[in-house]
Image (cartoon, rainbow, N blue to C red; front, side, top):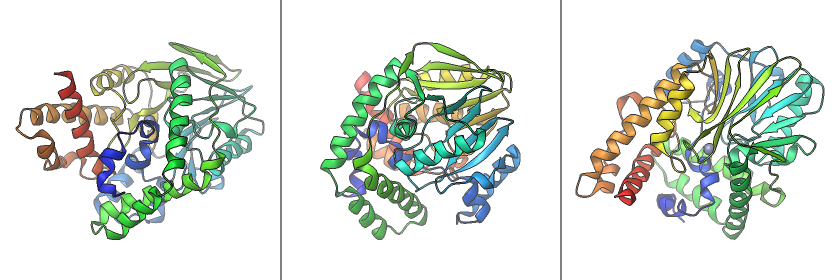
Amino acid sequence: MSVKNQANYLTFSWTQEFHTFFTKMPFPSSMIERGTLRFGPMLTSLLFYRRLIRMTVVSSLESPFFTVDFIADGIYAAIAKPGTGAMANAGIIDLGDRTLVFDTTMYTPQAGQALHNTAVQLFDRPVSLVINSHFHLDHVGGNQSFPNAVMISTDQTRTLMLERTQQFLSFALAHPEYPESVKASLEQETDERRRQELSIQLGDLLAMDAALLTLVPSPATISYDGSLTLHGSKRTAVLSAMGNGHSPCDAVLYLPGEEVLFAADLLFVHSHPSVQSGNVSEWIHILDRLGQEAFHTVVPGHGPVADKQALQSLQTYLTELLAQARLLSEQQDPLEAASCTPIPDAYQTWTLDSLYERNLKHLLHQLQSNE
Ligand SMILES: [Zn+2]
């Protein structure tokens, strides 16, 4: 199967939770600091971001799958390294009497176990609580590495996680040829940026493929609707379901005492977001609501730790994307026109640039089906 035919491949439902596999690959701080990225403008821009936030990487806790960023006393972010099979960011929080983990990264046992080990190492006790922000596999796949923790998600996330993970497993096992097809595409690709994107995809794909038979869907043991407040002896954490933005069931975790927000995939930083399984109009409104919260630091689902400005940047991107799709829908051949639409200058340095065209086409399909 050619990667150029991924549009068809993506229509299969398992990719709804596996979407990041093809679409979202943030470049973590560790790669930047080591100078392993070769794209000058992108590097410069990301370095600027790092300087802006001045996040401290706890190098002693770094694993092959993620770096560990110190946010505040007792609050850490695990920032996924691309191409390793971890894929999404996670949070590790000391509530005082209990340890809370927010999202569990991709399902490779090594990545989930590394997150578990880091949490135990940080606070010297077992992890008590695990939250799933939404059902996408790169956020729930490591659940099985926390067998003794109470697992929390919304009802909808729990239901979709079970359903889609099973679909993914069935499909992936039936298509063992896919990693080879990506490898072949990488070998034929001449565009340097596209090669970088494909090589990261291939790394994640091979890690997942190697672990496929060990994946056991491990859903929430406690579900909630609306919001849930966790009262620890040291701090309070407020879990809120935000509705249908990036996915049908996005939740965020807010630490009011420290004014820190874990936004999961409602926020992509310096990366084109995936809009394949949510509602962009609603997402824009959700970002408005999130922006009204008092916080100075936000941990995204993908990309480096950021501040409130990152929400505004994503909101502008989504607004412009929607407007562009509406403009294209009035043309004679909207899909062809989408293929020829250049990425706006403001997003030239964002990672995963192939997503721009795919996002436009997805919105065009939605606009057509709503007519
Ligand atoms: Zn997601």
